[in-house]
Structures are given as structure tokens and as C-alpha cells.
Length: 282
Image (cartoon, rainbow, N blue to C red; front, top):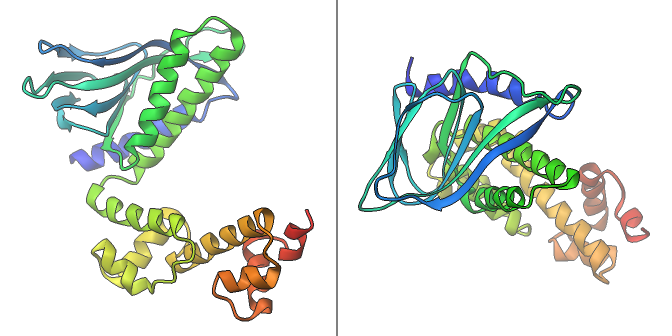
């Protein structure tokens, strides 16, 4: 089985595990470190009884998961648990800076830690949302140091679950990092430029792939065609203008490039679920 197939094969089991939260269990951190490791840092072959989630803030190194080696660098995420083993080493000329979490799943009723699954569970990938993930990792570390009351404990459990779900989602869509990176850059551009009306062929060229392939991949990853995604961003911006500005509906339509207010209103309702006048009257 190839490295890519091995990662994908594990994701469904990990998804089932994460899906138990919060209905059947909750998460408790056992340790949280935000450190720049020493030059002598090295992990010998290890299996753990709980679960391990690692984020690399900087530096260079390597992890070996069940015999498969991966480079550790800025933005790398590693999840490991069950019967999986791992080893680690770093490039002493560029010491690693990491955030490492160890945690367990605990039953809601008995409050006892659930036994780790016997399956070999892990995934690793280089995140294209490194800054956002780093913030979540750091917040969990901060709260872990303040642990001591039920509210903080509940907050930590929720944040770890959010982090796990987010990294699992990214891992499932990042088996080919370069391809995902190109798509994600276009998606982020459209999110921050809601008035952009670039033709799909232009967007595909920016992503470095053909128009047909770009459309197919975009819909596969994000559940909507790139054209419809453009329209959705436009209508979300229209909603913002109607709620937060003094523009009339006609002026809002013109701001978005619509000369026909009726067409704008019809498209707005199909995306947002209500007429522009209903938003303005809220």
C-alpha cells in the first residue's frame, strides 16, 4: 500500500472516532507543550496509550509513522494513536519549534478514559491554513495551563474537537498538496474579492490547470461550482451592504454590477433564502 493510500485508509476510522464527541464522550488533554526543542531532541520508537497531535511552527525534522517517513516543517500536522508507532528526529542546524498535544477520549457517563483503538491510526499533511491552526493550538495550550474549573475543561474539550475535525477535513483533501494549494488560493481570493467577475478560464489559469479540470476539482472539494461560489460570495457581500450600509436595494445591486434590480433580487433570494427587502427591514 502506498503512503497516500495508507493515509486515506486510516481517515474513515479516525472520522468514526471523532464522531463520538460530544454525544458519547469528551476530550481531556493530558499534556500540552509549545516549545522550541533542544538540539538533542529525538524520539525513539514509541506507541502511546492515548492520542498525539503535533503542529510544526518552524524548523526541520522527520517523523516516521508505521514505517513511512514524512518531513517536518512549518505547517506540518501529525495525528497518531491506536496501535501506530512513531519515531522522530530533527535537523540540528534548524531546530524544531512545535506545539504538541496529548489527550484521551472519556466516556460521558463513567468519566473513564476509553481504551485506545487497536487499529493503526494516523494522518499527516502540510496545512495551507497554518496561521489559523497555530492559533487554535496555542489557545488550547493557554487554556490547559489555566485548567481547574468545569467551564475551562469544557472549553478545552470543544476546542480540541474543533481542531481534530478541521485537521481531519484538511488531511482528506490534501493528499496532493500542490493541487489543493492552487485551488485554495483561488477560493481565498474569491472570498476576499466578492465583486470579482473573472471568467472561470482565467481562474483556472491562475491555479495552473485546465478550465475543465479546475471546475471538476473545485466542485469535488467545495461542493459547489466555481461560478456558483462567485455568486454566493457576491450575495453574501450584498447582505452585508444591506445590513450595514445606507445603500438602497437598487444602489446595492449597482454596487455589485447588476443593472437590473429584479435579476439581482431573484438571485439574492435563491442564495440567501429571503428577499433583499426582508434583510433591509430586519
